[in-house]
Length: 140
Image 1 (tube, rainbow, N blue to C red):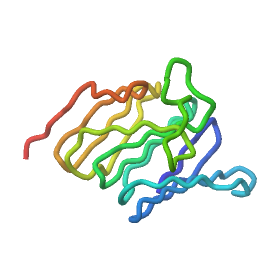
Image 2 (cartoon, one colour):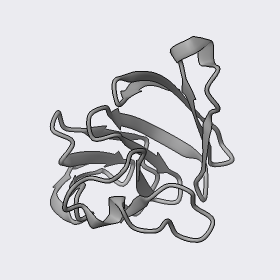
Image 3 (tube, rainbow, N blue to C red):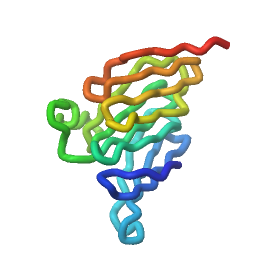
Image 4 (cartoon, rainbow, N blue to C red):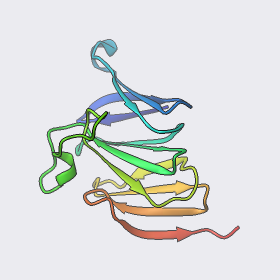
């Protein structure tokens, strides 16, 4: 569970072992309909970037999905693309870890995100393209 902001609005995001992630909007006593996302396996890490309207969720399928909850970001093609079948919100999938990913975190600009996995690696990603920028390995 995480409390964050999307577009300056406070949100409560809850995940579960089945891969569901639900975004509740706190304004007006939670009267706005929640957004529901489905990941392939148990959802773990959660972070938001308010001004870019980004939501990142990592899961046990060894991926991170970044969703855009706005009208698109200039020059970020994936944020204005038609969602994949079964999806209602544009997203990009980050692949590169070989094990579960319990944590994700955006930088303050929203241009980058870091993911930490139990595969002993931290990966820094470019949010615009989904490409890996750097990998940090920790020794056992």
